[in-house]
Amino acid sequence: MPARRAKNTDVKSPAKSTAKKAAKPNVAADEQTLENDLDAETTSDAEAVLGDGNEVESSREFVIRAAQDRRVKFVRLWFTDILGMLKSTAIVADELEAALEEGVTFDGSAIEGYARQDESDMIAVPDPNTFAVSPTPLAEMNASGGTVARMFCDIFNPDGTPSDTDPRFILKRQLRIAAGMGYTFYVGPEVEFFYFRRPANGEKQRPETLDEGGYFDLTPDDIASPLRRKTALTLEKMDIGVESSHHEASPSQHEIDLRYTDALTMADSLMTFRLVVKEVAVESGYYATFMPKPLTDCNGSGMHVNMSLFRGGSNAFFDADDPGNLSKVAYHFIAGLLRHARELTLFTNQWVNSYKRLVPGFEAPTRVTWALRNRADLIRVPSHKPGRESSRRVEYRSPDACCNPYLVFALLLAAGLEGVKNEYELPLPANEISEDQTEVLPASLNEAIVAAQDSELAQRVLGDTLFEKFIDNKRIEWEKYRTQVHQYELDRYLGIL
Image (tube, rainbow, N blue to C red; front, side):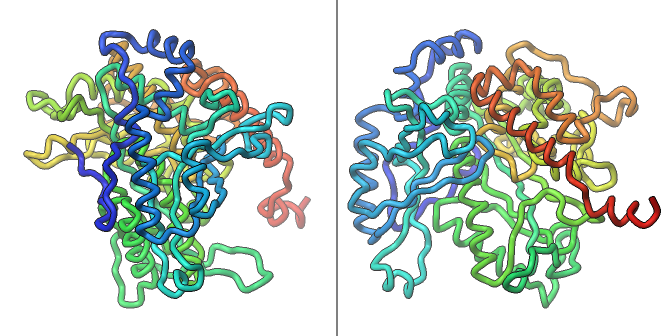
C-alpha cells in the first residue's frame, strides 16, 4: 500500500477516511449505471457524503473530546468555490457540537458558482474526519486562551441534499464510481512555487527573487531552506505527510512533494498546503506564490500529479510479467488520460497565466504524449525499485497548483476509468513517433475553453450546473484579458506606430 499520511501523536482519531467509508455499489455494475443510480438517489448521495450514522456520531464525539483536550478556542470551517478558492468561517469551540449536528448556514449566492440570489441559503456541514489543530505559538495561545483548529465542510441544500456545485461532493461521487468498479484512487502531487520579497507598504507586488539557485542547489545563504523546513514541520503537525522538498530549476523556485494518499484526503491536504506555504512565508517577511509563470525567461511552476489505482491491498497498475511492469489496467488508464487530455486542460490549467507556462523550451508539456521516464511528455511513467510494486504509478505533468484539486482529481480519475472500462488502445510512446503524429495541448485559455465546452466527459462528471458555471466564468476571464492593453504592447508599439 502507498505510505499513509503522518498521524498526530497527541490525538488519534478512530474515524476512517471519508473516501473509504462511502457506500460501494455492485462491483459488476458498469460506470454509467452507477452514475444513473447516483443521480436518481439523493438519499444515497447524502449518506455517501456524511457516512454511516454510527460512525459519524463516534467521529463527532471524538472531535468534541479532542477540541477540549487540545484547548481549542476557535474552529475554522473550510470549503472551496468552483475555482478552488478557499472559503472560511470561524466559530468558537462552544458552537462546535451544534455545527457538527446541524451545520452552518451561509449565503451561497456570494460564493463563485454556488447559487443564484433567489436560492441563496446553503449549509456547510463539517466533516469530522478532517479535524486538525493548527500549530500555535505559546505566546499566541496565552493571548487568545487556546488553539485554532480547522475542518473541511460538505455543502448541502436546505432540503438536506448535497449541493451539486460543491467540488468536494463532485470528487466523492467519482470516488464512489471507482469503488463500484473495485478501485481506490491514490494521488501524490509534486507542488512547485516561488518565494519572492515582500514589497514595502504601498508598493505593488513584484517578482523579486531571493536567490539565483537552480535544481537541488544548497548554498550557505539559502534563505528559503528554513521556510521549506518550517512549512514541512507545520504540515506534519496537521497530519499532512511530506515526502521531500528541494530547490527547483528557476531562481527562488521550490518544490514540496506530499506523501501519497487517497484522493479526497489529498485534495483537502492541498488546500491546507497552499495556505500554510503562504502563511509561513508571510510570517518570515516574504511572499509565496503558486502563479504558474511569474518570470518570463524561467521555468514556470506546475503540480505533477502521481496516480495509481489499488484493488484491495494490491497496486492495479503493476504487472511483473510486463516489460515495463505495467498492467493492462495501467495502459488503458493512460490511454484514457491521453484521449481526454485536451478537453480537460481548462480544468487542470484554468488561468490565463497557466498557458504562459505550457510553452516549448521550459520543461512543461505541450503535446499529448506519454513515455517511460521522459520528463518532457504530458504523461510519464516513473521508474520504480524492485520490491516496491506499490509505487508503480503514472505521472500527469500539465496541471498547476492553482487548479481546483477536487475537480481535477475527479476528472483525471474519470478519464482514466473511461480508458479502463472501454479498453482504449494506448498510442505508441513519444520516442517511437514523430511530432506531427501527436495532438497539441491548448495554447491559450480561449483554446482550452473551446476544447472543453463540448466535453461530454467533463459535463457528466461535474454535472450540468457546475460545468456551465465554470465555462461561463472562464469566458468572462478571457474576454477581460483579451481587451486589456498590456505593458508589452506599450513598450513594443507606442514609440513606433
